[in-house]
Image: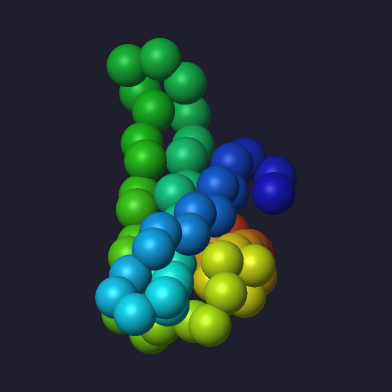
Length: 64
């Protein structure tokens, strides 16, 4: 998304649920930054967690 690379992730949680996180990277080399958000909401599937992380990351990138 523009100058940002948005990487959504899904991780297994308890009782068959999944949690979402997203990494947003910018820059390159020694001047690069990487922000990672881990969300607490649990989702019924890995796909729904990934959709949420993608949406949240894209929304952040559009605002900045």
